[in-house]
Length: 145
View 1: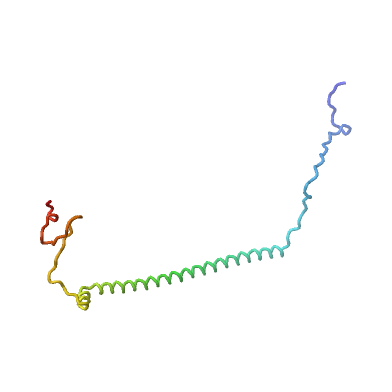
View 2: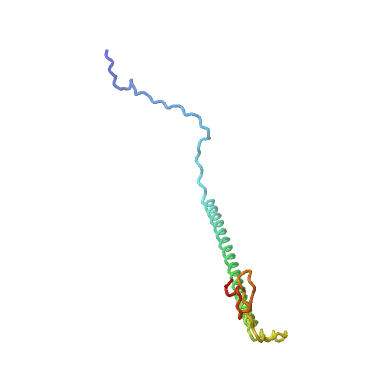
């Protein structure tokens, strides 16, 4: 008798593949969840869009208030600059009028000052020398020892 394989027949069925037992799960088995109803979806949508719209509206109003405040600050600063320019112009005019030679001469006359009859100029020599009148020559001024 030979060891030839036998044909598969009803008496010689195909070997069965038995399923292996599954290890126990650590989490409960999944279950089907009912889809949310249309009313719940709509309520959620309205709530989310309402919150988003309110947030955007609040942001726009806040931004507008900040821009308005900045505009008022800029206008106030421009008014102050104009006022200071006018004040500076007035001060320049006052300095010009106070430094006029005629006014200075009148103020000196009121104080009893008079113009000198003769003007003397003094030249200042190098350090250590003695000042002399401009018309005369000294040994220090002339540069001779």
